[in-house]
Length: 119
Image (tube, rainbow, N blue to C red):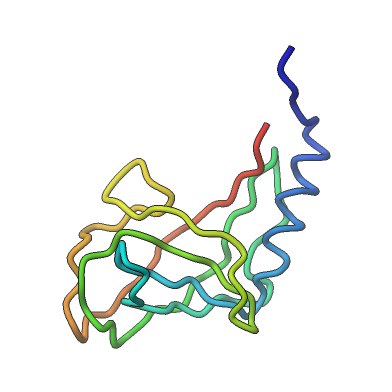
């Protein structure tokens, strides 16, 4: 038998994770963990979870990217402690970007992001 969480527990798990991110950052990195862009998060960073998924509030843009090929992301607290990380791609990844090639000086904008607690 596999295990699953009821919706109330999934909501609580998602909220526990994303509540750490208020005034934190979304950092986009290369596959070698080199920072390309850091986008500041709002307070609160995410809305309350629904059906185990929390949706990010507006994420500020980064107006001076260092430039490189994007591969990874990490979300950090306001004190720069890493909370979670994931992959970046053009579709089907933790974060979808219109292009993985980011040039120096580019403005990086994130239109949306969701965090989901596992079933």
